[in-house]
Image (cartoon, rainbow, N blue to C red; front, side):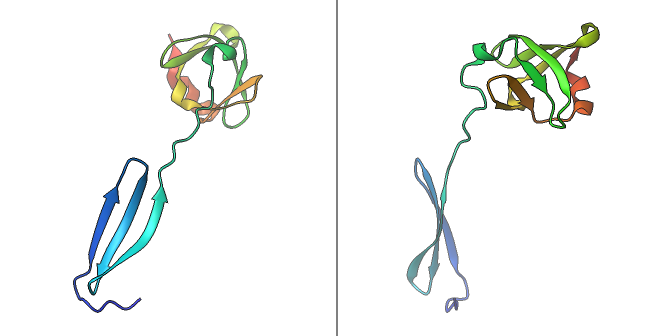
Amino acid sequence: MAIVNKTPCLILLIDNVNLWLIGWFSKVWLVKKRMQTTYPEPAVLNWDSVIHKGVRTKDGKPLGYIAAEDEESIYVLSSHFKEYRIPKIHVIEFDGSIVRLDMPFARVGRYKIL
């Protein structure tokens, strides 16, 4: 596309759902790109259904099982009396029996309850 005007103008137009990138070149309005705003579906719709289910890390290692949950976290019990309070934002998948986290086993230690 050739730009006749040396000072092109770009405008972002936002409505409730879409973001429009509109350019004005040589007194002609062109719709350059339309981007759809999407929100990911939550990994778990019913958090009560994950109680007593197994938890695995991103690298596939078993962590333990979910003993409880609150508004922001899940509480995981592991072997040797280890307990973890992991924010729900780190849950990426629940297949009905296993909850998967978005972090490797090495990073889980920061959520250990002392």
